[in-house]
Image (cartoon, rainbow, N blue to C red):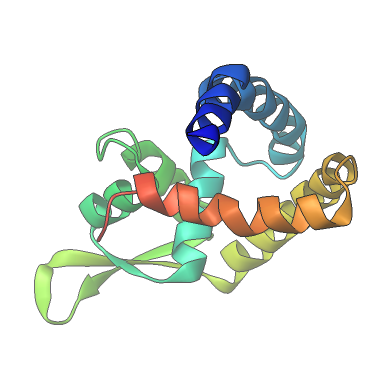
Length: 152
């Protein structure tokens, strides 16, 4: 019974997750925006580059689903990245109607530069946490993200 009262009380005493995360997410977006602009990429372009640096995708539909974008929304992003030599869209030898999307070496370099600059800023923010809390936070966050991310 005591355990239930403590558990119930602690849930009632803490703010909702969205109330805690929204200011943090707004801060992170504001922090990333000048970094992305300095490297000539938008948030969506960085999301595309990041996904394509992890693996190639067969078609824009699969890529859009992986990054949580509407497939029509990323067409202009893909066109821009391809024109700039940051991604390739090659015909799939197994299905000539399909395109294989991949990051080019130049695209990987841009993504790596942006990621390094973002991580530098993130390190300053994370320094506000004691080492043990920081480690726990960074360990738990991917699990929460994966829990809400669509499975491919």
